[in-house]
Length: 284
Image 1 (spheres, rainbow, N blue to C red):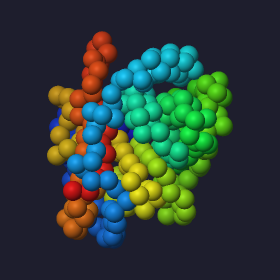
Image 2 (tube, rainbow, N blue to C red; image 1 turned 135 degrees about the vertical axis):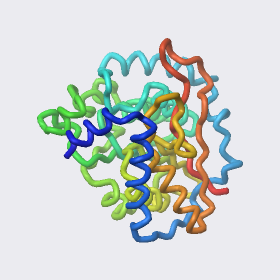
Image 3 (cartoon, one colour; image 1 turned 60 degrees about the vertical axis):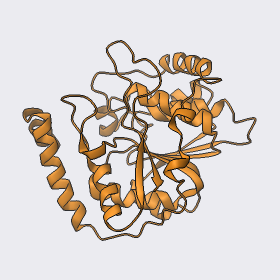
Image 4 (tube, one colour; image 1 turned 120 degrees about the vertical axis):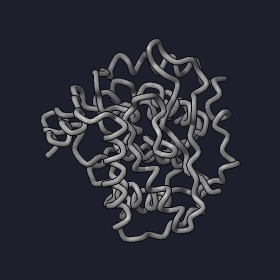
């Protein structure tokens, strides 16, 4: 089935494939049982200043050192499943600026965002007390022998890379389905990153449950949010699931909005871009 899906995706133009995906996932989302979202823990949209959070003063030098250190242990591969480099940098800046004591990442994958968040937390872990990052994935990302690890091209387990970066004590790995973990989660987090690109019905459930796990005034950041279901770049394939999930919650009366990070405040890499699909969730 996975091979068939890949063949269909590669054969269809991005626009056609995106429209087909939205239709199928939208139908599944509409059939999912309704959930009540208590969005009170989220900040108001007007309280979120992306430009302030991404200021380089006091962080730019640390970023360059972190980027170099991570580059020595993390191998980027063509067509990898890892979060894009500009979004990794944005996550590092956000964690450094906000200095959360507890972070939840849903979707470890190859560990790219995990490494960047942990390196940011390492910078202030002694000054602000113990810092903790819980990262959740459906399979054991630290076992290179699994079929999933081979599919995601995980050559070096994230736990080993974290040890080489002196961050292993910060991170706890959890093997679980995202919805199952969030349902049973009893603790609250200062910062949550949803980075698992699920289907729209799963995104819908996980957003509601993630808000429950958020400490009041904390930040909930989602990856692969495309406003209006439109691509950031011409010809880009779009995952509309988070956009559809937020739309259904709004239809149910939740005054929930997404605050995209938009163009990032640094020059794009050669041949790259300074655009990101990261977005905060907030109250209107």
